[in-house]
Length: 451
Ligand code: IFM
Picture 1 (cartoon, rainbow, N blue to C red):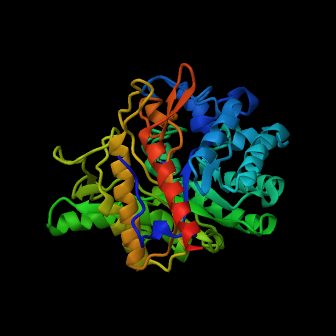
Picture 2: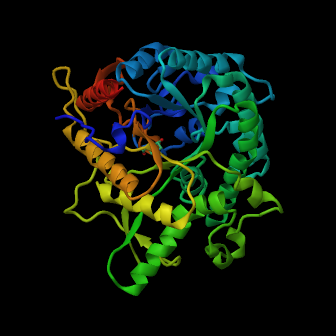
């Protein structure tokens, strides 16, 4: 089974960036060389992580970075997206961990030497525990701390970075971390999540001018995750439910960034759920972005219900799902991109994550993850379709390079195109990695022929 770039598709253009992605807590390990993060604490809570695991070793990437970077280079990708661990850089006493900076600098030097663009995310959920102890994202000061951290990183990395993302998926940090409590820090109240969002978005907005000043040649933006919602029936109440789900889970994040306003839903929220918006905040939050990162995995159907007016349904038994139980629905990615394009004046869009978890098994040194190849192929087609219909899309990243720590599900779900055998830490390219490698080699050869 192969991956192919259809002739004339946006993926065929040499200007279209294709890469693979990871994040710090999910792969790094080497927890003793950094401050504790909220995920270290959360992993110790009984029952918080499905397999009672943690990120202390993970994929041991800090010790095996050379092998992992060689893998990245072997895939012929244009770009590698990874995140910096805030607690590996900023110490509790306010000093900077130079060893932490040096770790990432050597990654960046490798990438630059191999002509691979570095896409650096500053916050992929691993908040230093000492900041959580002061209120975490419920404390406005955390946004200012983030801006300080962004400045330290951007100054140290200089022009090694092609692209910065301030935050990855603030929905997960705020909603899963502060409303449902299934992610760190495990707080569960509707009174928290919209306040946490506001401070996350403020952190983004405060960091943007700093990135522009300290890294003028890099592009800077933010990465959001989206789930497009569809009505369970044609009834008006189910259609209203879709609007509400979209307003709470998608629009709440993207609208303030692109327009400087929260959705109209703000007025309907009970007082205790409303964020405290200080004069000037919305202007800071809506600082211009060079790109919008879009992470897409699945869609969901919604019906009227719950006291909020919507209930998100599990996929029907007859639809194809991933090992996460998420419906495989490439059309949702086209629909989402077109809806964003209709609703907003978008900056260029980057698909910063897309991929699937499979029940992969290593047999005779091989992992035949055909379903993942099909998933990637169909979703690349969905991106291309949106581009043909007018959305300006500049790149696509597969989640993920390596099997890794899938948050509350621990190591039970495998998203990698490279298989990781955790007891030995041996890496094995899955069939999908080989398919990507050969697709990209063919694409380069074709581009050279056209030159
Ligand atoms: O593994 C996560 C990643 O950290 C953020 N986006 C979704 C992925 C799959 O759940």
